[in-house]
Structures are given as C-alpha cells and as structure tokens.
Length: 297
Length: 297
Image 1 (cartoon, each protein chain N blue to C red):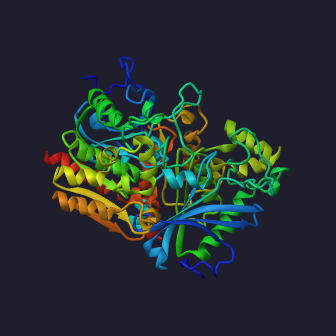
Image 2: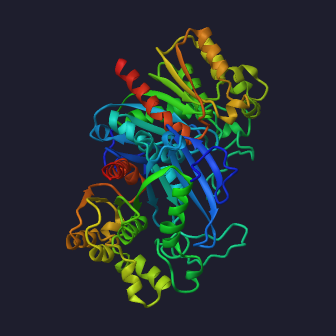
Image 3: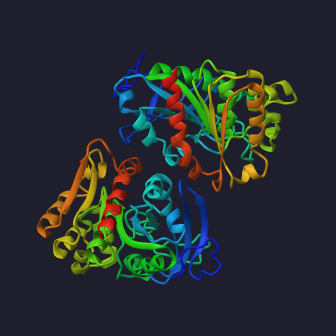
C-alpha cells in the first residue's frame, strides 16, 4: 500500500489538485482518469493528522445530491471540524461523469437538472447514449473504493449522502453490505424509481426494463436485502419543499426497513429545509454515527 | 424598536431575501436601499433562537476580504454552530457598493481585484468617480450599525474581519471605539496605506492627500488612538502566500499595538493559508473572544 505522502511523485493514478490545512488535518482534492466512466473524475478527501501520519482511520464516503459536484459539500457542509476531532476521513466524489471544458470529452446531458450531468444516481446506465460514461455505481463501489483503500490510510468505510446522494448511500449500502460498515442519509430520495425525478432518469438510463429500475430503488433493495446494519440514521427536515411535494418519500424507507427488520432512526426535524444549512446542522451527528459504528466493528 | 418578527410586512427599510433554519437559529439575508452608498446593499445575519425570541444578544460584525460579498463567509466560514451555542448574532455586509444586473445603477469599477467593486476597504472615498458610491465607512458604522440596532435584538457589537476586512475591523474598531466592544482579525491587511494593494486603491479613493491615507491606515490609527480594548485577537497563517509576499505586514500591527500600549494576542498558525479553510479553523475562537468581551462589559 502507498499511503498518502506529501511527495506524490510516486503516484501513478492520482493528480493532487489542492491541499489546504483545515483544523487538525488537511483538505485535499484529487483528479484521476476513471476506467469506469471513461472520463477524468475529481474527488475531495479530508485527512485528519492521524491519517496523514499513516495511522488507519475510519472513513465516510459522502454522496452529494442533484446538481452538485465535490465542491458543494466540501465548502458548505463543514464536516471538517468533527472529522478532525474524531480522526475520521471524509471523501466526496462527483455526482456524475462530466464533459470537459476543452470539449475533448463529450458526455451525454439533458437540460433538466434531474437527468444527465450532475444526476448520475450512483447507478450503471445500460441505455445509449448514457451507458458510455454513466457507470457511477461501478465507479464508486469498485474503482474509487479500491483506489481509496490503496492510496490512503483507510480502515473501514461508511457511506452517507444527501437527497439523490442519500438514495445512493442507501442503495449502495444495501446492495454491497460487505463493503460498508455503516449507512446514513440526510433528506434522502427514498424510492428513486417511484419519484418524478427518478422516473425520468431511470427511463433514460435503463429504458423499459423494470427489473433494472427495481434493482436501483433503495426502498425495494432494502426490502429484499433484509437487516444489514445494527442501525441506520436518517434526518428529514419538516420545511423541506421536496419532502412536502412528495418527492422524497421517507414513508417508503420506513416501510422497507419495517419489512426488512432493519433498525432505522428516522428523525423529522421541524423547520429545516433541503439546503446545506440543514446539512451542516446535522452532519456532525452523522459523522459521530459512522465513527461509533466503526468502533463497534 | 421593532425587533425581528416573522411577519416583516411592517418593515419599511429591509427586504427579507431568504430565511433558512440552521442549528438553533436562522440564517437570514436582507436587502435595503443605502443612503450612504446610494445603492441597494445586501447583508446576511445569523439570529440564534434567543434573538428570534426578542432577547438582546451580543453581535459580531464580520467584514469580508477582497472579491467577497456576504455569501462567502456565510457559506464557507461556518460561524453558525458556535453562534448557535453561545447565542451570538453574526452580521456579514458586502465589501463595496455594486452595479446592478439590470444596469440601472452604474458603480465605478476597476478590473484589478484590489480596487473598485469587491474592494471598498471600509473607507469613504473623496475622489471622483469613487466618491459617488464608495462610502463604506459611513455605511458600516452609521447606517448599518443603527439599522441593525433598531431592527434586531442586538446588545453590544464587536467587529472582526478577514484580510482587507481584518484591516477594516482594526480601522473601524480604533476609529470608533465607543461603537464596538471588541475587535479581532484573521490574516488582516495591517497597514493598507503601505501595501501594494492599498496604495493603488487609496490613490484612487483619496488622491494625493496623505492625511486621508493615514486616517485610513489601521496601524497608524491604532498608534494614535492608544489602548482601547482590554485585548485584541489576531490570527495569521504561516503558509499564507499574501503574508509571505509581505502584503499583510502583521509586524506593523504589532509595532502599533506596542506603541499604543494596546494588548494584542497575535497567533502565528503554521501551515494554514489565506483561505476559508483557515477562517473556519479559527473562527470559533474569534466568536468566543467577542462573546467573552461582551460578557465583561
């Protein structure tokens, strides 16, 4: 294993984009060529001093919501202080493959914000033109997962996310329970295949094959997978417009966990909306949740 | 006094732009027509629940650095958690007057980032074309100050800032010591009239009148004002390029405080740079500093 070192010249696959000291650790950005998406991909990673010194630390992989890239959560969610305190690593990948500014990589897109670039749903598309680059599930659970474990001082990995990324965390956490030690979500989309955003995206990515839709629906996957974690933590704001419009459907997650015998802490937080102001208000408790689960295992 | 209420219809001067629940309080944005700058101005204000309930809370006025508006610190500095814990109000004004998108307000500008829009230096310009709108000192210490005290449940007010805004906090704090209860700064420009950025800006705003330059230089003002606060807190990162290039000159602040008999805690923080990653790493301690000073008075 080649744990992080200040001298990155020996790295063949990762290009370090930036390093900033932040609390007792460093916020890093990396870029690498992905064989899953066949595009360059960028992710951010916060490394507490323990990890910089090469000591194995628990990590949490954070999946962002629609329209976001790695920057939004890294700039606005303020996970760094809690990760510094606990000695947690925090990784934020992008939400989809991207065309590049130079125009040399042409990734399919759609002008609606819930399909295409910024809306990868953490699934592997099977329909043209999407299938060429939209292989986000393989990217996250195989390629990035292995890369992180080989390049950084990572012990166990938990998974969390917000909105579409909350769906991704639930979906990947219950599709690949051997890979993740803990799962949590903030204002997740709970049943993508039965939401107005997800229906459009899944029609594009999977066509008419409803088996693929089902296999990419978090609540259906949880129902089928059964109990996989001693506890999962989900926060939902009561003043969240998307929740109040019926898009997020936490009741389907609740029913799935009930059917699966999966313990779920689903907290309704009155007054909070869907924004990063809500994320920052609860992310410290989510990081603590993942940290506790890592200690127990 | 008309303290903040959810029903803002009775407000004549403030237009509420947004409200987001955040920790145990709310992040608000307001827009108002400024008689000082003769433009609309936008500021953000974090109100802990105590203030929302009408109980007087101590406040800190945060002055941002070059190129910033109210968003940068509000999104990236993460003061909300500490302000929620302590019951502090946090106000972030813009750094200059602005032209509007519709083109109906034409504010003088310069393509260099250290003069013009985004670079008001918290001074009152006396030279055309700048003098027409660049009246940021009057805006902050008279107009906004009075507006805040009349519209929100504010007790005492401290002042802090970053970079150009750190200079502004030192300058205004020592020019108007009766208005502020406490002063602190993160990576401040310490002697604007003798810095490469400030020399260009002050030539534009003040012309050749060096008395005006001196009256707008924080270190010179402190030397003349003498001891005004029981303690001021300043943090400077050791890996800050602007510091290492000689732009910030904390040694001039140190000499000014020495000459004035003004107690100064000047902390050099190795490895930290000039970014919001540094600001977020120390802002909690700055808020605690202002909170303590408010308790003592």
